[in-house]
Image (tube, rainbow, N blue to C red):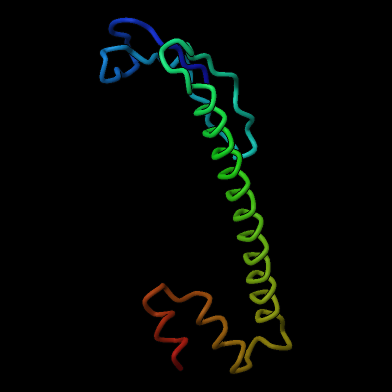
Length: 119
């Protein structure tokens, strides 16, 4: 993403309290692992801009790592549930009471699942 500071109004951007317009040339969206592009901000307008940018980049990297970790954890537990489902559907276990109860929990909606877990 490239951000530039311009004087006056700019289309597609927004203005700060001093009436200066922030022009956003492009927005980068994609996977959490997408690397951040360079940003250009005039340090004359804000002497702490570089510190703020570094801090925001650090926060972004931390957030991206958290998202990546959560995706890995979600996939891990989803695979466990799929394995349990396949086990319950095998011929040896298909008609067992335990298998039927597990399948009921897996396919119940959220409200019904809470009631089924109490049993």
